[in-house]
Length: 210
Image (cartoon, one colour):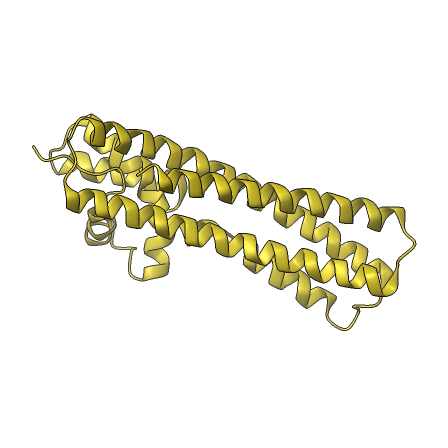
């Protein structure tokens, strides 16, 4: 029986064919995101007669194909900006805004940490297949494309994090707020942003392995 790559592109199409609720690209991406997508991919793979080993590989990283849907960071930033609108110079509003940025980046980093773990496990499998010469050139190309898509999605989140921090830095330089609360939240945001960039770098490292 032919091997199924860890980033199994057929899983998404099969999911939509079998599950009546899967009617749009957004819904498809949401289905692929996280444990639910992996579980669905595994069951569908088994239903088509493949082995446990093959299907575990397929289920692991089907979530990565819809990686962009796994991040809610941009929506949270937009919400924070909307709440700040018209009160940009108000210190209390700014403190609340930076608190919101802290919470959004904490969740983003948790999401990125999970993506790194999932992609690392999958890449370990692909590297083993390469070493054992059990993966075709076409399958390998799909694995590389899936990792490229994963990295692009994560990089987009990191870019928004950089932009949010830069905007707060500009406010701080202009208004020079005298607030320990603001200073603490600002320092936390700087650290969270560093962690975001580091996590994206870890995803980039997985891409280079294949």
